[in-house]
Image (cartoon, rainbow, N blue to C red; front, side, top):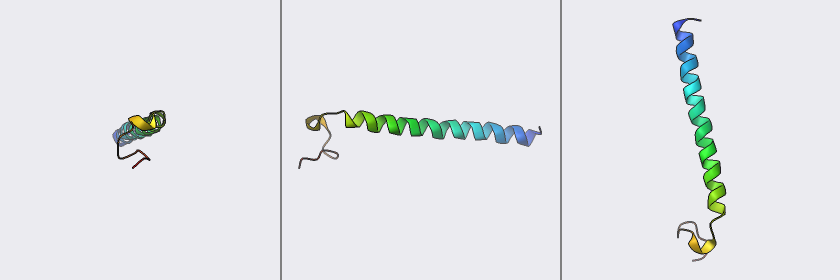
Length: 49
């Protein structure tokens, strides 16, 4: 493998792991937000107005 190959693999793994981690965080955040009672939600996301 050339130096360019190592660079591309390194950057690819770094960016790929970052994307997967951010997807994981968003999905986990949405799941946890759904568990919050309606009365304890912030005003931007509450259904009651």
